[in-house]
Length: 310
Image 1 (cartoon, rainbow, N blue to C red):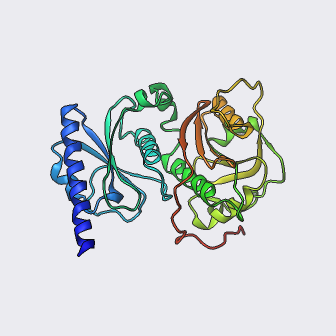
Image 2: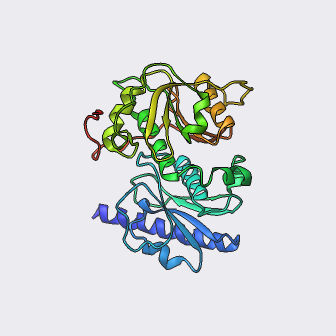
Image 3: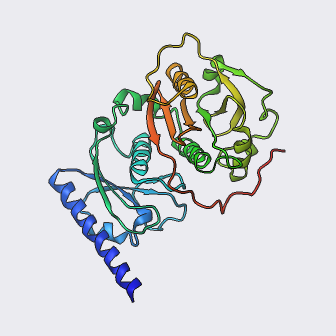
């Protein structure tokens, strides 16, 4: 009986917050909402309240309600704090063209796994995040496929949360055009990815994750092409004419190299900090996304226990 009362209370809280969200949106003439669908017991709650407003659904799941007709943005499966969920959701929504770089949106979410809405935020990409400039977004759109970026962030978050054999992991992933990047690369060790089939070097293959975890012990970066295939590991980023790069306090050589390679190319780099577990995404020489170490990570039910290359 107590559980039923708690469920009713949580449903009532979600309905009250969602109702208030649409009232606020209409008062401020905000025409689009980002909604974390995983924390909704029933999507009809939103459908029943909307009156012409656009909705972008954010989800960590592949098992979505069949009747969703609005755009859907896949988030990393790793459970994140509310602000980290909002930041990556907003980034992917802008890169996918679902939200304009200067468009105010209303964000509805809750604690991962709670099935309850408890957070309402108003965000404007270019106002609240200076790196969301029109020129930067136009430079990125069409060059980087967002499903590859989302998957790399997911891998980075898992490495940050789990480490390797009880020890923290620090590494770099560079996502971009291999021909453009070639001038700035030098192999530190024999490339362990060379000669293996592309299919088993894909970041989208769950079985490849454990291989990535092992290769992360090497100094250097992972180079990932635009299709999500890892072309090399243990690769030194040799950027000539290095200029001073503004970095947050506590970030060192690994982050500086990742930032510099994106200042010279159209690539995006994703960095896992061994010391803090923070995941930072760089583009255009700047940090465009900073995500804290995950609160917890989802069990790897779909992952193979080991991944080896043949």
